[in-house]
Image (cartoon, rainbow, N blue to C red; front, side, top):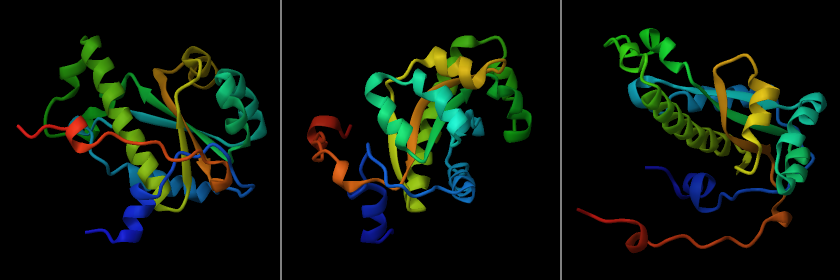
Length: 193
């Protein structure tokens, strides 16, 4: 059982940040995030997430025109923006990642299964990414609100990777937070069958 401090860090006090302190995120921290998130479960260990960490000024210049108007400033000021992509050819790695069965054959020629599996599991991995970043002391600002085709052209051209979502990373400026929004109650969102 995690203690109250850990639960606060991961869930209860964690917030989606829109403003950032002028404090760098190191490459070692980005590697640490991946070292943690890679262990989260995916179906048949398919692990379709592919991440581009946008850190340099040149990379930010490529990314900002891809973002919606409301997301450009917060993305431009974030120390790092992670583009969480999904490898649409993830099944090519299944012989190594899931050697217990011929899992690759489940996907070859089945585009609807490829699409659903890549999206579902890269989204799961994106959730693990957020938890890993919070666990090492960083704040996150996950977003939709971008032109997917522009991001795919700018960062994934010539590959089988497509963007799923974007997440700013850094040390959040608590002074720029909105009041916390409400959540649905258990009764509103859940059933016990």
